[in-house]
Image (cartoon, rainbow, N blue to C red):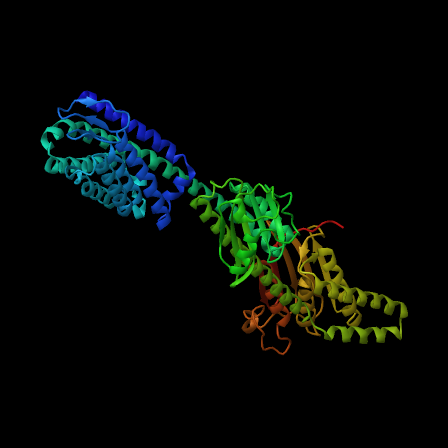
Length: 581
């Protein structure tokens, strides 16, 4: 019995070596992730070979249970028996492939075993027993959830133990030499088969988990990639953004080449084959054209399926994913390998996922761009609403001054020109330097004080760089409001103070007057809505608040404090400094 056990271990070792080489064969690893009929057929072929091999390298036993050394059991003499590891291979086929694969492989194993005994009736029971074992092992594995990948070694041992015990039971009941044979071979075959099943499954499960780990690593890479590629599409899908994203994808994935196209031409191509897949050229491969025309993912497993026009193209497998934006195809993402075998189900899923992410980011970039355009249009529209009647008053003032002091009128015309220029520039810019805003304000005050000489004083205090950026008309509107609404004709020593400073990361602008204050009933409405007042509607402040919200969101703040002693308006916006001119 000891000799038989050692010989059985030797046979199991051979099968384990074959299993080790099998799991190192990439096409086989692909089959572990697939559930389709083609995959099951291929598993049947593979395990049928294993089980026939197990029959052929079996150990021949004479009627008295002595061992006959025969290197290859093509035929078994009458009265002789065989100890083999056939059940191990049938069990493993069922665990990996499921009940159907296990059952078919079991049928092949049983038929071949019967053929070894020249179709004698005494051996026919091997067919149903092998089929039953294959189906049961598949049922135990719950193959649809890849349970074999999470099986512990002792799970495989117990399943192998049970399946070989079922086979021994059939031999005991149906074989003419039942008890005599079983009492000699049962312990070695059951033990060795159980151990072999455990080791075989451990090897397969190890490589399966490695594939899953690779998938998890790729998922992390895709998340990093998603964060880094989103800013690239803020200007849409073009040569620059496509090239930037293609380079990032090549860096964060294990593909050999990445291509991005629109519907007609290549926008970017990096990696192997970039010497003839060149940005700006028409799409070269029929595979890409088919993906764009059909709107379906295209997979090529060899060079001929890619059908590149360059005969020396190094790319031999590919995934082409059409990019959809609002149900419209705008282009494609192409990922390539130089080897055929590297295109596993994990890589296929990764390529499809990258295509979906890419399309989503292009759409998000387009939405962000449209939002900015709308926001910019709103801001420019608000700029255009700045009090136009001021211009008519200024012109009338200059006409009146011209009759008495032509030089003063000339100066006022220059200030009016400065004011006009500031308005035109402000309508085109979102933010301007503080120095430009001060010129605008001083031009306005010069014209106003020409109309009402000596009525009020304006004091400026600036503690920040004049390159600090502010939205156009910010100070001008606040000063104009004070000039128009803060004072009555009987008031004396009328003052407006303008102060600019930096507080932490904010630019603080304070415009304060010593006027009669604002009616408390309308104070809370100012800056938020049009108010019902004889002195004004509050439109300018409402526009200013709307611009702040569009530019800075919640980071901007406009506060109005007012009493009978005067009004103080405080503006805080994020501090930004432009380039020095």
